Length: 110
Image 1 (cartoon, one colour):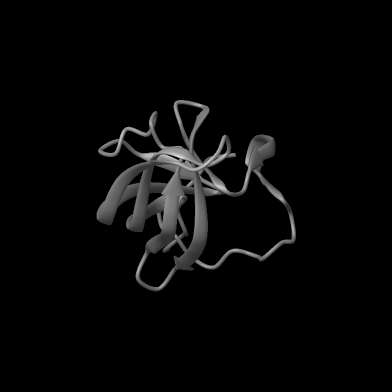
Image 2: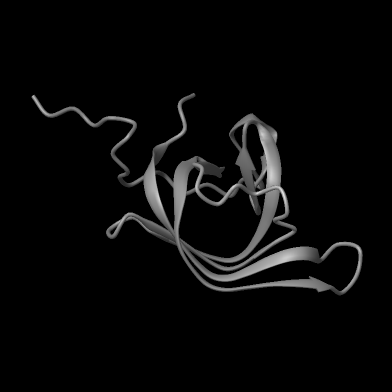
């Protein structure tokens, strides 16, 4: 019959962990196994299969057209409202994207 697949996002149990699979940071995007950006103001909408970020910072290494990994999800950036480069200190510099909407492609394989 119809069995759920890992490419079909659905409800997942909510946990209080501070890291994602593999010990990754929960507030970061990964590509090719390495961290490429930090995120803030996260909204995950499983009904519309979207992940929204208020801000993506330190994103110089982020390849926008490529698939990303965020927490337990595989995502693809669909829309960016605003992009700029700022330098306001060591922890927050480089390319900053705001109003980022991503398509939720599925879950990372364990």
